[in-house]
Image 1: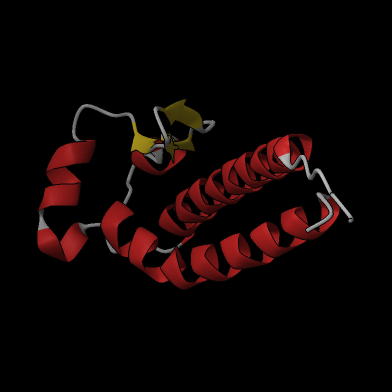
Image 2: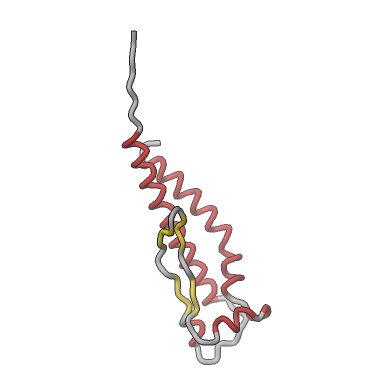
Length: 118
């Protein structure tokens, strides 16, 4: 008779850690891409340069099982400009970068699983 005891605990922990790091990296890079796109391709005229200079991507953080990052324009009138459809800059930048996020996340997850031995 042959008996085998398989313990996947350590392997699963390694995979979980690798996946979390991969997702965190993908979220970080996506936020940076959105910020860069919003800065370089916007329909408003930035007379002072303040609005464009205020656009920033923040580091990802975990909220429960969700990893989230924010891209923010920090001027008093940033929200007003974004809500005026012809001048929106953050939403369209996010839409333009969405396909890259999906591709990057898939590639990172595949690499993370392989690195963790899966």
